[in-house]
Length: 137
Image 1 (cartoon, rainbow, N blue to C red):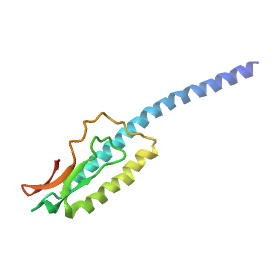
Image 2: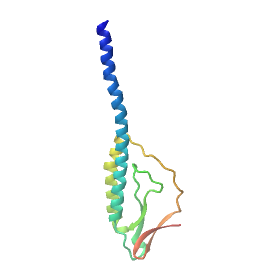
Image 3: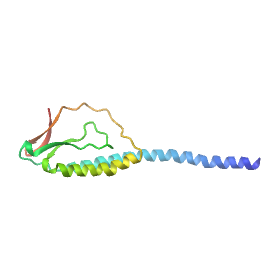
Image 4: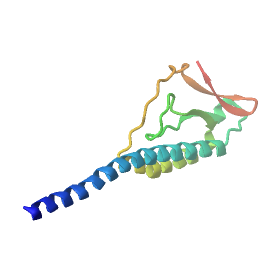
């Protein structure tokens, strides 16, 4: 009898820390998810900041959407960029998707969707003051 009580206490003593650690791990998962989403968004912002926007006519510009599956977006990052830089920018954003967003998904993270204001219309690319800009129709 004495042996079974001790075995029960030992099992219970092992079980309590497991409950504790599972709870802490869940908190860390949330932190990891937020960190990965922030990293992906920051990488996208850096890539967009480094893109070329100079133009001499509307034909030099193109509207491109640079959304990420691991970032909450009301409008998926529609930008007017120089046509000459679109492919490189897409490749850079795709790399973020394939690395950081892939980690986000592997961690079991889900995007927390916020309430969004409806789109302002259809985005079009215009060359304004020698810079590609999005205008909505």
